[in-house]
Length: 378
Image (cartoon, rainbow, N blue to C red; front, side, top):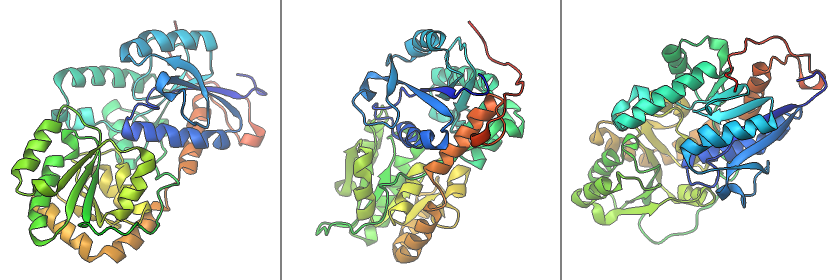
């Protein structure tokens, strides 16, 4: 890359259009802000066929297969050799082989820290693929101080190689008057129906909480193999007739759900960030979430924290959130305003420049300085 040229950044955006919740939201919001954050760069989006019709800030440059193995072992290596971008940005896993430098966003290390929520095959593949990517990447972007410390500890990374670029709520997550609803008030839980999100604990807590209220529990999230077990728990809870499974809810429809809720419940066992916490806060909705991991860091003092493994503690937290609704709503709005995708994009762009050895400000980019080449070539 020459002193006068613009960075050519390719982005593996295969998650766009796939209904992959947080990973897809991350890509949409980040790519919307990157062109302004890095006017010294040209961005190429490598996406799947589902992204072709999406209104994205960066149009799709190449189409990738939906098959994970084909994308990582064939499609990406081939198009990277053909296009020769200066850098590839991925989430979690770099292609093999990878003929260009890599910056990787690794949101968390749940497959290492809470392995019980993954199958044996998933654990083995993720440990190998993410470990290789962490060693390969010239910079790693992550979303919280919690995840940064775990990455440094697990992969023995120097601090300056890991950049924090936190998530944020999208611009359409904001307070507004919710439509009048004559039906029962509700508690909202947003997240894929997987064991780590703790839907079973949430249902048990709601069963306890609902004895003294007329609330319903609305559960929004993509169904997985675990949904049958969650539905059985709901049916056996004694409050099953007050629990609604909404399935996957598009990002554009989530703000109205948050605004109408008396509280957002997010009692996950482990998170590298926990975007629904911030989305609810940005809509002015009180939040109950878990102690520990990144959730406590993101929520700070603007939510009520509970023990994820104790349904009674969660139920008590729900009662507290309803009682302190106005106070928590104001605190949550202040907290949410501290995060922005434009700032996240600026930090990510900084990671791109550092990975390419570019120093100085954008207006007067200095010539690249030598960077140890850790990249496998083909």
